[in-house]
Length: 265
Image 1 (cartoon, rainbow, N blue to C red):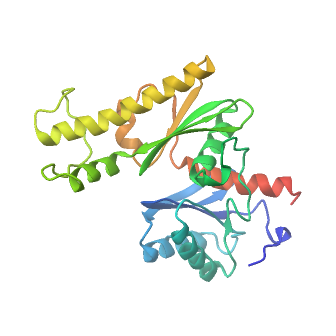
Image 2: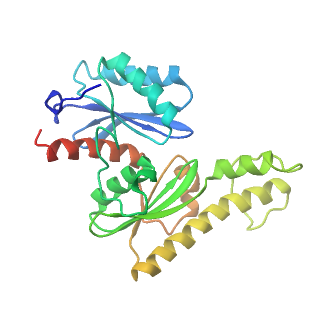
Image 3: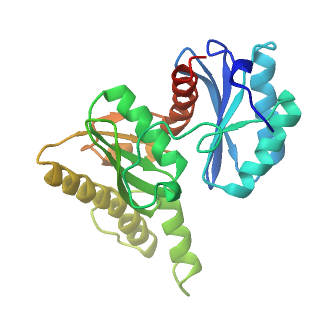
């Protein structure tokens, strides 16, 4: 579908959608802020359609656009179809109709997840300086942005829930356990040993990565954290400076606003 920029009002509210491997986050973006963010399971098209319609209804016909950032190609097509049926206009996709919001200085910029770039852009816009961005999601990402707002790269490791499932599914005797951090620094049962290893291990791994970036830069940049597991892991990551929910979703909204301003709309 062809998109004409003069069809979009930069002052009007829009629907922003962040499609992740596990959850899809949906919110209204207006005046550089998120309104009523919701999260639904990415595979649940019915719940996602209901959430999109709820946001559209609340805007009483003011919606200018729906903007999607996604790391799940199949889900992008499905949810873009829901948007088109609901709004009677196609969704704008970050990385396609809307370019990435910041320079990406890596070996292959097209291979970097849109969520990582959008979250990093939102963090940089908030801090206005070089920073480290940690996203505690299905995967944990730890990314670095320089003082000029250039995405330099980062690290990816399995998230807490993924590690817990993999241990259970790929061993004969290890049970599935829910995320928890036992009081002692070691587990006194198999379940506690798994929880200690995974949950404290993720916190420790992220600390090691953050310290490595700081050593490389010869200074300690601000570190900002987000992601679905943020509330759980927050008490155990005292080395993080700032906590912001839905950082990638904010970056999607900022990407749209930035692009329209650059195009003189």
